[in-house]
Length: 327
Image (spheres, rainbow, N blue to C red):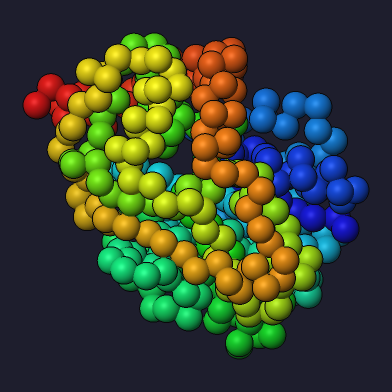
């Protein structure tokens, strides 16, 4: 197939592009190249590239011409940034998704919306199933939920061939160093503080990026129209993850600093992945193997992350954590 991958220069999107190319598909990448989009993530990978905004119908029409499917990774995706300013999240995650849906409807092609477990909100017990109500807690998860609901509405109203995947916290090589694992790994390697929100007992499922991409590809090729597919990982609390990072980097445990918690911070996410597993999906990497591999990658690839952390990422880090760490 010829597939449009939006946000294909980002973390998960770039891994997905490599996967499709390896499978013999032709790929067009549409990426706005905001702070977390990096063309170097696709170095040596054969693809067509269009720089632009998914909220621009003209740009989408050019990029998507001749494509047989659209997989939408393009999103403003960090909860903390959404709390600082929600406007861009609504533009990209809601309006941008609408623009892609309009093109897919007119072109009569499949659209896969890559979403998140965060749309379900807190899960005190058990696991979220695809038919559960959405209870987003942050501007980010609310904007993603808005995109998801549009997909389902277009399926029902217009007969669009659309579906949704919802993945757990994803980690691995090439992740922008603002999320917990890459931030704490790179900080530990540099002897900087590891700012743990609150008591650090927030629980998440951790999913290696290659397993996440395998889930999305399976949904693209075999998922049913209107379907929603959860892709869960292995559950750990944030302090457990932090402790393993300290062990693997050899960093001083005194680098851990408990700081003021994030507003509206969900305590736990957990996904029931049985629907996707019924299609044949299985995780191939344990969290232990994955975190060892990921820490080793960041240790070896300072050339990739040091320039990022000295630029925009440093300004954001100071804005987000300076007052908390000084408290």
